[in-house]
Image (cartoon, rainbow, N blue to C red):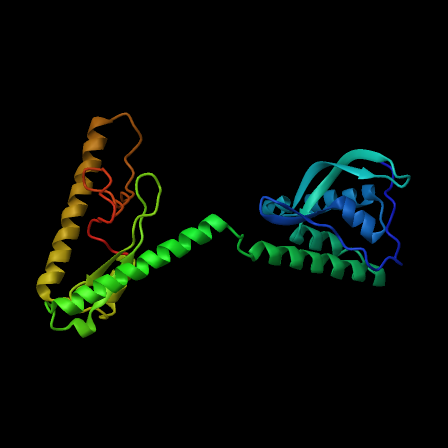
Length: 273
């Protein structure tokens, strides 16, 4: 194809105009040709040569061939193949560009990438989400206030000064947020993940009694036995199928009952969070 006219080095205010595709900031081979004063077909050949030399296929996603519209040196509109490239793709390509002018445009492109990527990091302003956040925060504050007031005023717990509270948010079956729930966490209760619980017991951060450890061991052994029986039953009923997987079944989410049905909002099974 015909070469693309280059930007004059006297136009110091010109800035690369990058774009966002699938959440990634990109530029094009056309812009690179314009700003670095190169023929577009030469830039295309350089990109194809890079693609052939790349040992790691993962690098190829940095260059995507597209169809682009642009204006030629006479101001006419043309359509041609080009490459859309990521910051990493641009850096790989621009490594081969040398000279004072090339350095100036490298810095201009890097600054443009930095600006757009910084904009992507800013949270999008969503009035509906902001309103919902304020509403839930107010409800949560009211729930915590009431729970603490009830715990202290009731006098049922002589150690209310050391009481701990768990605040939970949930959603109903229609995906709407439910009223936040606040509940007292007892001295014999803990809020942790299963993986962290194992580490706490191993490191003696948690010191269960002999009876509690025995109960844990019994419960785990019983569940492992049940899973082994299920796998054996499946293997027996499907003799022609591939060997049964030995992968451990995924745990049931805390908001789903043992019968597989969702529990009422605010209700959970043996929660470890």
